[in-house]
Image (tube, rainbow over all chains, first blue to last red; front, side, top):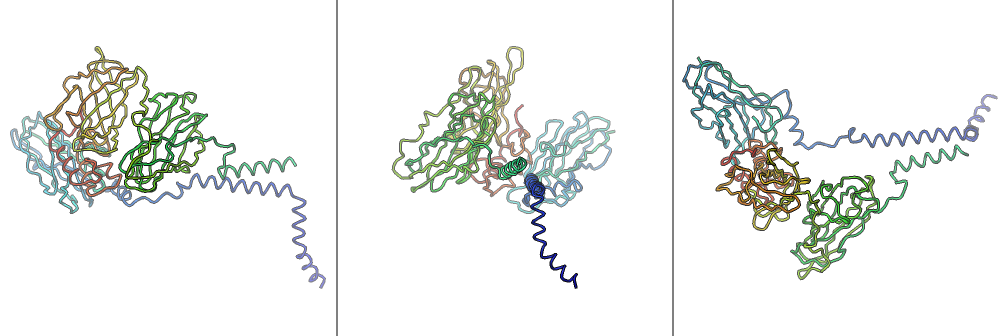
Length: 214
Length: 370
């Protein structure tokens, strides 16, 4: 019975005991409060500093597609094909440049093809093979430069899948091995390119062709 | 008691840091706008001035303005006024934007803090399209003026009110003939050029960023200046003019001038009056420009035209990348699209722009001069 009467008495004294404790430990509590406040200030400051990194701004959809297009796991390809590997002296060598864009629409392309004028001379520029594109070309005697852009009146997406871009015909001049080399450097714009609808170069691999002249 | 005082001080400072309240009062960094009230005739372009002043010098500013009513900012005059004079090679514009009712101009000043300017004037060209009341207001909350130590000065509210009318403008505007010209040292060669931009006509209040370099021979030695930036400004006859200064210049008479403008292929010009029968036909053969320091060197290169083709990333060639920029932006008229591919400056990327770049691709070497 005594216990039953004691318990409520103790509970009713709790605020008074807390107040007594606070009064007797004023300095300690003030220090604790100050430390808590400083931590809040510090935390807020750090949060402000790192807010941009923690919650980056939304990227426009265009930027997202740029990132996807530059996915190195699916690079677009440009390569040179010839009708055969071995040619005789003064024989015609027909080369074809083909490209695969891995499902992405191509708006323009550039192909810079270096050849050795000691072994080969350019004898025929064949008609452009992609009618949807406007072609521009030049030949310095050792470097063929072909540029093409999708005609404004053509609106359909141009996806390359082992698609021939153009053909040239050379004549052999000297025996030996020689190479048609595609000038290409990743992320550069002034060499061979496959340009997509965001004007990004998606070309990730370029393969030339070695032939033998006997 | 001492502990209470320390704690209270600590908490107060933390609070001030958090709320970013300056411990000491900021100094004022902006003085006045002239005229603050004026009549402005519709269709006329007039110049107003904003004067900045700081006893603790100014190392840079970024001013943002907003207009309301039928008044608009059409240009920020390139040259600032300084009192006393300040070395123009230590002045660098970092931003000039005019987009609808919002405009912005920002400069930084370099050099020792003791030599930084403390008093300068920014000149703004305004015009109105119709009658009514118009106002130009400094967006002072988002503007900044930095003192000589790089600390922000207090920017106070500022505005100018215009009574836009069809009759006349009041006399308080700045006379364009009194605008300051940069005070170059005597060792500087100032080159004034006039040229054409293929496909571009009159581009009112448009400024095209350009770079000039002087290369050549002095005696038996090669000489090349550092590239200097400047603006090409549209003239009413369809040509573009600009002034570029080269510090510590060595005089000579066997120079060529390398000129590169934004979106255009670099051209090397070495004749006083170059000419070409068709676009892209001119080639520098023998460098023969005479350029001297301490004087204005005036060249009329309008017999030739810069060729558009180095769009987007500057790589010195016109190829599929550049053609794609026009092709991919056809029909667009956004600021970024225009900046990339509006080749005739008619505020839309269209078939005309495509035809311009197609012509250059078909009829020229498609390469920057060496």
